[in-house]
Length: 90
Image (cartoon, rainbow, N blue to C red; front, side, top):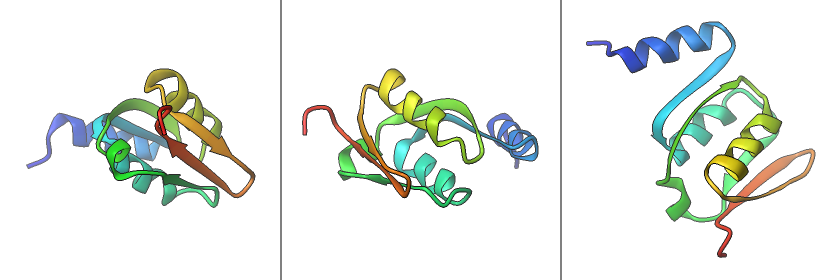
């Protein structure tokens, strides 16, 4: 059975967007990484369990960084090749 959240995700994907609705950050990062060469890494398993909600264009690393820093309050270090996400307290 396909629920409403799955339908939104499928429709978003067709439009070039990734839709996350209270999804664990580790799963959102895993899905995001499928569509970009600039990979995102989580510095700890703890932050991977944080719920994340938002809509991002596929491969839009800058918007992902903004979401993680401003909406979730995580520390983000990035280069041309990768993005490392940490707790602000680590």
